[in-house]
Image 1 (cartoon, rainbow, N blue to C red):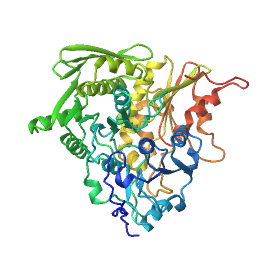
Image 2: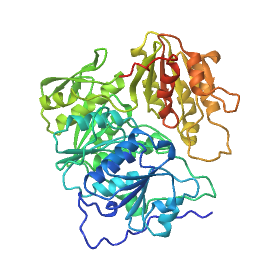
Image 3: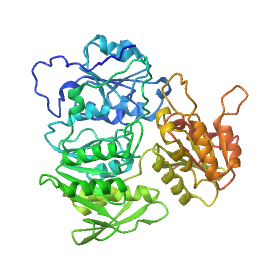
Image 4: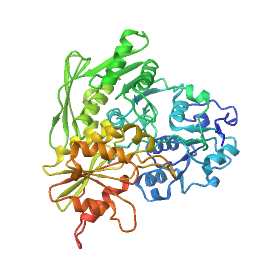
Length: 511
């Protein structure tokens, strides 16, 4: 079947000039899978500016916390994907992934000649010519913690944000008329390459070429991450282009990719771009001392312009602590008062599903992780060791056929610091897959680092035990279960706690 390009010119909007409060093509947007990471943040920002936002969700998300937040904010959310959800008064449809089969809502957009935008291009459209301060976090992966910490550090009551993952225990910011913090990471949901003979939906050339021009940009990490960047060079080029479109770029030198971007920028300096380095040695512009774990939060010490500043941030794991350091450095570079930043961060409760402790039952602690990239998975597994003296049992749901196939060896090796691993089927929107199951390669790689007896797999079938039962059979008092994934894994952690609850007990000890 011929690929159909649904990117067309939006209908006339009466000649109104697009502004951040009435952003043209997004004035009456319909968001498909609006409760998914990244999409939720975009919808909340749009509706906070008085825009008419509709969205559809998978029926399994009907009772999710994200759906509740969206409805409370005023987003018109419907469960299920149906052509009737795309009304004739819509100005565009925003889609978070790649369609690998006909989709009723995108087919309807095609009939109505509505533009279909990927989330990244919707953000570019929204922020192009942005009339206020735009602070961005970009990179190939690992932006969620940095963006959430940065939004909190800048939360002066007049700052809004569009995040891929909300901060825990904080209401979403309803707009903000001074500045906007935006997470530009492309890795917001499961993406798949459309197979031959299927329908495809692509943003138009004009939308692909639009790029935000932030006042300040933090680039968190730069590495190969399929399906977004097939190789490291592609990721480096994207990060370098984003840096050169910014007024100031902040680069953490502990990331090899960001260090190469720094070398590129200094080899060919641009007088319009200020380059600021954050590093673990005193020759960096912002010198970060080794983060100190206090048992429930990290004490962070930064030297900036000859003055030492200390901050306490509720994050788990050295990598999340360093991400917080980079975010704080960005806030300082943006001119924020260090004392105000410290006071705001005191209320920071971590990031949803980023090494979030869900609770403890029968002496077993359950922790949630949204990690997708192999490096993130490895870092979260290592960090989980900080929370227990018992065994670490990792329940891993790899994300996407394309990603898992390309990174299978790295994903399996990322489990090396675990004691045992339980592998769930690969999360994918594809209805069928004719090729080999990439989970086989993940399993082989995991067996190489953990041993055959430590790696298990959830099998489907009427007589096969479900993942909750398998997990309960694998743990003992004092152990920790780390649930990693973005599909069924999102709902698995609470169900494991319930399964661990003895009959007649009131429930798990949850934070």
